[in-house]
Every structure is written in structure tokens, then in C-alpha cells.
Amino acid sequence: MSIPEKIRQCHPALTALRRDIHAHPELAFEEHRTADLVARRLEALGVEVHRGLGGTGVVGVLKAGRSLRAIGLRADMDALPIQERNDFAHVSLHAGCMHACGHDGHTTMLLGAAEVLAAHPDFDGTAYFIFQPAEEGEGGADAMVDDGLFDRFPMASIFGMHNWPGLPTGHFAVHDGPVMASADRFDIEICGQGAHGAMPHLGTDSIIAGAALVQALQTVVSRTLDPLDSAVVSVTQFHAGEAYNVIPDRAKLCGTVRAFSAAVQDRIEATISRIGGGVAASHGVSVEVDYRRGYPPTINTADEAAFCAAVAGSLPGASVLTDLPPSMGAEDFAFYLRHKPGCYVWIGNGPGEGGCTLHNPHYDFNDAIIPFGVAYWVELVRRLLPKT
Ligand SMILES: [Zn+2]
Ligand SMILES: [Zn+2]
Image (cartoon, rainbow, N blue to C red; front, side, top):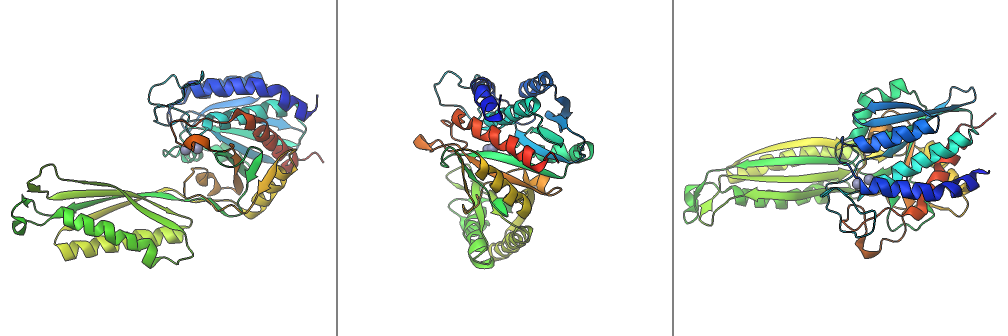
């Protein structure tokens, strides 16, 4: 049986598997059932399996030939704390938890690739199948690296894939350079002096200071960054007060910062701090800024991006876009790219009708794209670890 025939033959069972994972979503670092399912399927294929990396992570090792060359292919396994609003048969069985980012599909496509490559070990080297926990905000990739992923499984490069609603089925998008932004967080505590709502002159109003700060923070991107650099500073929370007739002594602002380089992150962090100090002085309050780095920007390396574009472009029925702008969303695949060259591509999930974007309660992974994802992984391994 040829590889395309094998992929076609696997499609119905992979669809059933994807829907089973969809019906049993698990949150970050709690992917016990999913990890067990992944490990047992890999074992059944004769793939060497290592469990428990970075918590619930699983690594499958498939060797062919004698070459010492090795590469990593990564999928994520976690779901989101969202109440699903679909009514199809494979709807989430866990209240308040759903696969709204398609990690059920990513896990399934990588398992499909392992199945095809185990049946057709038509390469020379080692393929590591990396199933990581906790991509959604909790940094499972970082946990895998800290747990010795690259020491225990030395690899030359690493590759990732994410479904992209709105990008047509059969399309891939490959970015040379930045593909996803960094995601930092800040908490700002404003402390003034409380007073009667009718006697503001007897206190120091934390709400007025907070309002001034929200406004001033809008100048971080517009007035301090190079207009050709992309960045976002969003204040997403403003907490203060509990009564109609009390001026509260404290206010709290929280938000997110997105950028594509460490230099821009540094600049934003310093500017928020400076503005906080200025508002404190002008309003007679104290302002404390707690700025925390989260996911770094995801920046594909040039050689690997060109290689992935060639792989995707070679697949029957597929087309490749290399000129899409990057997303201001974030992705913990960035942690791997701090250590290894690699590339993270988008695979079209089809038209995003009905508002079915990622993280939407009506989202569902499109099972029609499974063969494209599997074929991409298989072809990537065959081309990067060629038989000589
Ligand atoms: Zn997500
Ligand atoms: Zn995701």
C-alpha cells in the first residue's frame, strides 16, 4: 500500500479518535486520559514511548536506518476552560471544558503520522513525536524543556503545526521569521487615600489616577515605539470601589502586552514603569507595577521555514501561502525555538463560518484536514531524514 493510500485508509479511524479526544477534553497539566491514549496507541504501533515529561507529556521515538540525525515533531494535548455550545454527537462530556483550539486535531494528526511512518519507515534517522501538555497559558513546552526534553532526546530541529480557521482546507501558511507574538502580563496597584464620595478634597482618588493611567498607557505603542514595530498594550481589567458614596483608596489595573522582539518587550516594560511613576507623582498616589514575561515571540528560522514551505507545497492538493501577516496571538512553541531551529506552520481549518474562530464555544476541529496534516508530517520526516 502506498503512503497516500495508507493515509486515506487511516482517515476514518483517525476521525473517530479525534472525536473521542474532543468528547474527553482535559485542562493544562491534567491531560492524563489523553496522554495515556497517546502512549498506548504509540506502543501498539511499536514506537518506543516515554511518559511523564513535563508532567503529562509523552515522547514517542521511531528510528529507521543507521543515521544519528534526529528531529522533533510536536503536538499539544490540552483543552480550554470554556463551556462548549455545540450539539453534535462528540460534544464535550466535561462541563466547562472543551477543545476549542483544535489540540484534539493536532494530537490526532501526529498520531496518524506515527502510524504511517511506523508502517512505512522510509527514512534514515530518528523521529521524535512530542505530545506536550498545557499549551494554553501554562507553558507546557517550557516544562518539557526543563524536564530534559532536548537532553534525553537530542534533535537537530523541531516543528509545530496549528490549525487556522479562515484559512481554506488544504492551505498551509508558512512564515519566515515571526509567526506569533510574545505574551506578557502586568498588574498595577494604585494606592491613594479613601474618602467620602461627597468630600473628594479630603482624600486621594485612586480611580482618577487609574483612569489617567489607562489613557497614558495608550501612548506606549503610539508614541514610544517605532511605527514599523508591531505591538499591543491592552488594559483588560480595572477593579476599584464597592459603594456609591465612597472614593476607594485602591484601584487595580491588569493587562496583556504583545510584541515580536525582546527589544520591544524591554522598551514597553520600561515605559509602563516610567508612566506609572509619572501618574503617581502627578496624582499623589503610589503606583506599583508588576510586569511578568510570559511566552516569548515565536520566530521561525529561515532555513526551516523555507524547508517547511517546500514540504507543504509538494503535497497533492495543497497550496502554500508565505505572505500572511503574523498573529498577535501567542504560542508556547516559542520556548522550543529558544533552543533549536525550527518552524511552526498554520494548516487551514476551512472557512470560519458562524464565528467559529479559535477559543469560540462553537469551534470544532475540521476532520477533513486530517489527511493534509498527516501527509505534511510524513513528508517532512522523509525529506529531512532522507535515505542516502
Ligand atoms: Zn489556544
Ligand atoms: Zn492552540
